[in-house]
Image 1 (tube, rainbow, N blue to C red):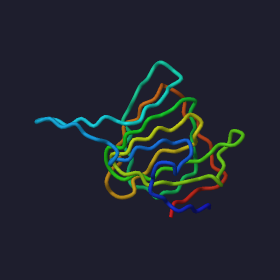
Image 2: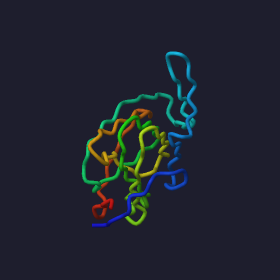
Image 3: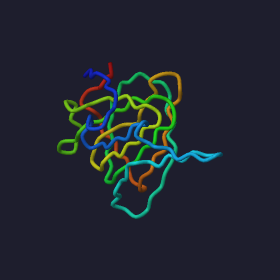
Image 4: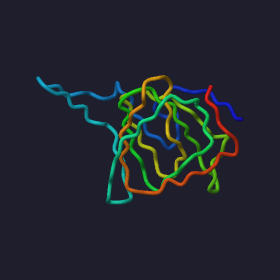
Length: 152
């Protein structure tokens, strides 16, 4: 089993992933609401866009699969602290030597570029991770990693 150190996510840490951390959002407040515009944009190849809510629970940060998409995905992490795998693909398979597991705080926005390997985040602790995911409707083909990757 390959072990990798879990790192705190920051801009530039993961190739193929654009990051906006919560402190980079500047809310506009009124007397009964607050609006925080997301600072990142994605350029989708496909014209139809959909979205959904991902909920993830505490789980040991051991990943055995990765997935890759033909278009970008945008994630807005709303609650909890997530641990998420990222990996590069070489010749159609995930390259375990490029595996990274990062810690993602609530309030973070990510744009995962098409072709960047990743897998569904797990919650670091007992608070459920919730994220809104926006992307074109597309397949999420999963590929087995050559060996499990454990975050330490």
